[in-house]
Length: 121
Image (cartoon, rainbow, N blue to C red; front, side, top):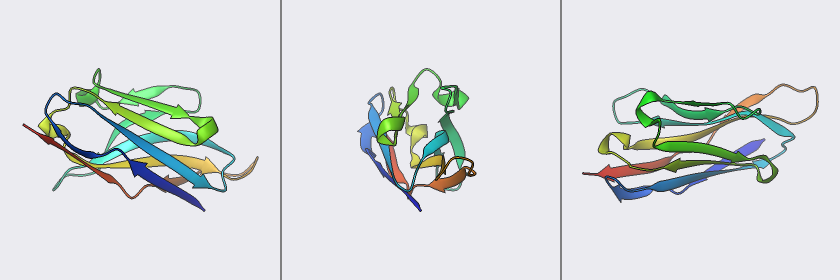
């Protein structure tokens, strides 16, 4: 099994910054996609940022130019640097990874438990 633990959430004023971290542990050979999603109250979960194993990134339009996703495969970590935060960024942020246990195996999706980010105006 793979466990994901997020950290770095909290309360910040508009215009501030936060860095989210997600540590993966367990039986892991490598990762395919690593990503961050978020879910605000009353809204559907949405993709914020993703990065493929080849380094290709994809961002939600609303966060482009403000958020940066990065990953450290050797440490089984994925990060989300969030700058110029806005009240609309308030949500629970979830780490998502696709991991496989051995060569030839399939990549399986895993989710973290979520970390709250609150941006005050």
